[in-house]
Image 1 (tube, rainbow, N blue to C red):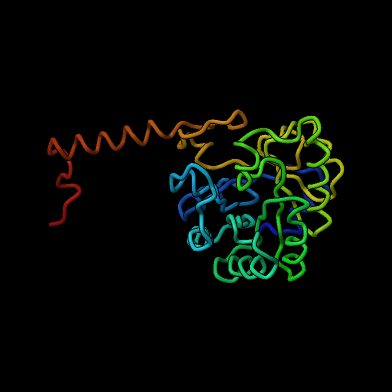
Image 2 (image 1 turned 30 degrees about the vertical axis):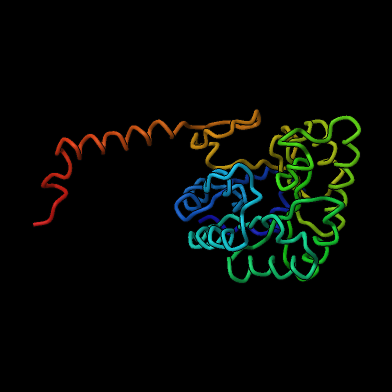
Length: 266
């Protein structure tokens, strides 16, 4: 039987050179499917705002909405480590708010760790949250909550920006994070950061040399047609299969072919 994945196990995977697998999930059925596939970490991402709720960015997502998703995933009782994304403005308004909101994700949501976007600018928050024994996963590089400052979803860390990304990652580690997501940065830069840090790096659009990888589950299943970044790989195209099933259902109801006696009670 598969053992529960813990933070010490994730840290050991980095030391052993074993790749860490991370997928998002936002509800009970997808959490069960992801966990059944053997993923190491389930991230309840604020990407739910885009792929689940239809927003253009993650910025509108609220604490209450994230708690709803985290609770739904928790009910799947995953063996994977459960990490909850902290939505925009849940941690940026001060250490006291950050500790309270992160605490809610653990106490009310059932998460086992939280993810906080930002590097040097958020190190004091990561330090405060970590100091009250709430494990923190960092997130540097392309941080979607900073989309307006960055002018869109653009690769970060090229040329003169590279040193800042390195400093961000080092600050996150020094503040007590147990891992850090590297998003949308050149592969060589991600390789350098991974070699310098003692904590695992989780890449998304950061090349093959990170300690692990994360993708949005809707993307790998071919269910999100809104965006198609270069770093996404679709492992199956479910959208046409689902649309086909719905069309068949509609046709059968209209033609009187469903329900039949087989689907009826005496």
